[in-house]
Image (tube, rainbow over all chains, first blue to last red; front, side):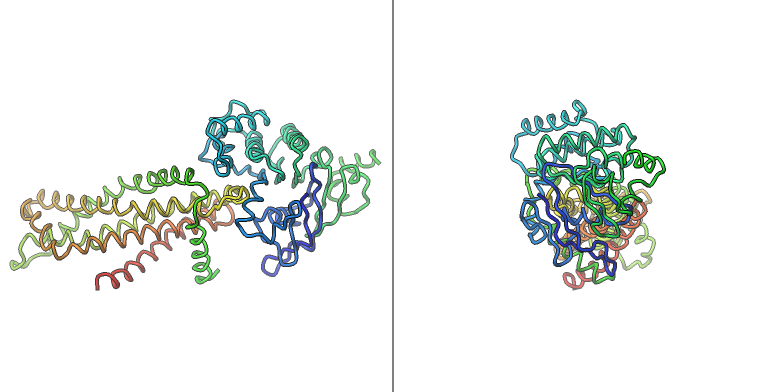
Length: 252
Length: 248
């Protein structure tokens, strides 16, 4: 389980996060949603340690206080974390195979043959078998996301973070990526945290949803709860379009 | 950020850059790749510049020597001293700062803005050490060899230019190049020592500006320019300090 306890974050004189406390459910897809500029990415960067949380706050991974750890101690926890970035963040100079192999090469003592087997297993899982020798620049946006997922699961992570996995993808590919994230979460019993704006993702894969507004944990619930909520900010965000408003009226 | 904050952050960065690599099996291939990218790929440019600069030094020296009291072999001597003491280590390093420095800053800067460095950090990799140490070591250890090559080519350039112009004979030039070597040989150690310092400054400063790039493509370009300016200034300052310390 990932616990976020009383997290505040200031950049200079500007406070971005205000006393955020939540728990991300293990073995489920947890979503962080909210409008742009409300602090979703900052919160995620705090959780994975790319930003330090301000004094008093804590991030706990299965009870281990990540915020209080040294860099060396964090390095061990980080090997249990996989992350899919918004822009995929694949290493340009490496082939697809080398990208997926990278964490294995850095942190395991596997032989080349064992690493190759594991890479093929991961690529097979994201339906990219046979694409080993391509360079990231030779692949489509959807493929890059899938390569990113393959790299993220290569080390059998306990925690998976996905930063806007659907951005820049067509609706059909978005569904493929969403389903892949959900399947992998259940299959490997991973605690998955997804930042998204995509309402389809919210409805389809959101086991636990956290709505951030003005840097605060504004609302929490499941994808079933969000349909019925009367929280005005959540309603304004989720049902922003007239199509969604009509849909809500029909659903309620 | 003011200058002192930059300097402070630069030294903190160096502490991480010189921490033990996670895996030597990963470090060595990167080190050899950097030798090729930074050192070997600079040889054509360095060679071209060295030959022509050597030629110009000898021709200018010859054209300014009007006194009959000065023997002709002085041209070879002055070409050698100018090349070894200043031209090859300092001017070539400044040119390399432009080529290699901008390359390193833009490479690391692009990785920063495309979140590749974040990806390394999240995996638990010491991104500073992983990206910078191979570059810094490759340049610091192998640039002196490039500079020795530059010295040799510069002297050859001076010889070709003078002999072709009929200003001096091969024997006279060689006599000048070899003159007083027993007492001047320390100049070579001085030159190679400062080359190592310059190589360290170029790669570490360029890496610093690349690593702390924020924004997008525009900022990557800006970091690249800042890296070249800052490393050039650092080379000139270090040149003065080292000359004072070693030669005087």
